[in-house]
Length: 272
Image (cartoon, rainbow, N blue to C red; front, side):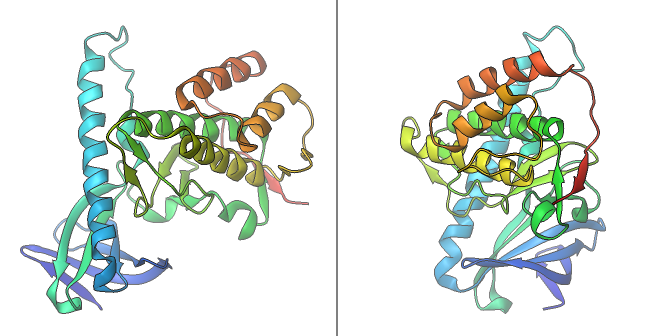
């Protein structure tokens, strides 16, 4: 598979970068724009529906993110302040059945404001591949933005199902936090069930704790100052929090007591 064509769109496939039980994922380049993208292709036609649903959900999230941004214009006092929910998910560039690839579903994704896909790194890679750990203050913007995204997703009656360190992507340069894989996401007619929300918040906090070099079971962290902050991370990781909006507010009350609101560079050190 060196080139994929859908109508007037052509994608040059560069290399495989990941795979799951549902799909293979390739780095590709859109030939007309030279934009770097990710090509997601179902492993078999039986998985087509899962990828189609993921593309639909991503487009729904983009629609609601734009809607909320428009509504926010009417109430915000600073015109430069944005909600930026759309930055937390990949953009669906294209979505189609590819006859030449055995009638399998293909989704083409890009990351908004990101030219180099390699800048988007799974949170889990920090410890598992780089043998590094983030510091507490770096973890604060990662966890805070993840909670903000979950609050937004739940507000649309959608659950993610996969809030692991492999599925939470970060951009260290631009401080982006992105939920990538929505293949197992669910849509609910009313509110996302409490147990699902609690589990996904727990997964998120656990992923951040692992990236810190901490231990959810023992509560031991390489850094033991800011204990109030650590204890709230542990509370979320242990499944005691299910309201993402309240969690986001409570989380930043603690963060603001400890650190100033200012840009803090992505900071890591060797994992011991």
